[in-house]
Amino acid sequence: GVCLGFNLARELARKVTYIRARLEPEVHPKRGSWTIDETVEERLLLTKSREWCYERERRMLVELRSAQKHGDLYFRPFDRRLQLAEVILGPLCDLPLAGVRDLVRARYPNATVFESRPADKWFSIVPEEETVLRIDAIA
Image (cartoon, helix red, strand yellow):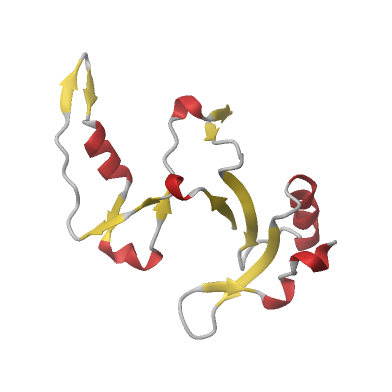
């Protein structure tokens, strides 16, 4: 797979809360459809099982009406508050590193592209050191 890393304005990054028990929000019928309170909706979007706490995840919530639709998918456009910083090619990714670098560099010259591998002694993915280029070495 491919992982994208971003430089993100701090106020856009929301902390995920990790809990033991599943949330059971109350849902109320309204005008022929089911609705939930905005506060409950936000809790549902920003809550995960405690087993995932090692991720220390942050999320950015985007309203669909402000997103760009491409087919069945919605995207938030990049701007000064959301910038592509890195593209990490996963250990099983078969995309060519040089090709991905060329593609990324054409639109996002400051983004870094590198391959990754499983860590030697723990359950983690780490950069494949020889594929990481310094910014000044790219020019």
